Image (cartoon, rainbow, N blue to C red):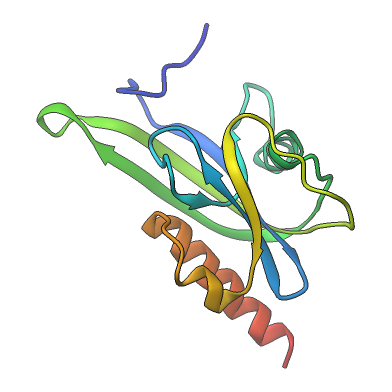
Length: 148
């Protein structure tokens, strides 16, 4: 049975990762709603029987071709987009991790139109959801604290 993403009967759980190489993070430009045309971290839905950690690792590899190492939980948040008559059109509970990227080339699958490695100041100029901006700000604050 396939879960419908639009107008779901309950929230869907997603997992993703802020993938970094030193002071830069990997962002993908999304092709599809709800964040079509916006920059985002790699991630997707958790499959039945799968932990959020394994889902984040799988999604990063599917979307970028990179096998990453999770460093820890960053944030748990909600992403809700209103639809007809205020009914949620999309409703996700998002579990985001920090992840270190190995050397290697990014190879996008069909879900994204572009990718880039960005510093914190560069991310401030990109079009992205407020939730993505918040998790990136959290990541960069932690990175700055660790480097002290």
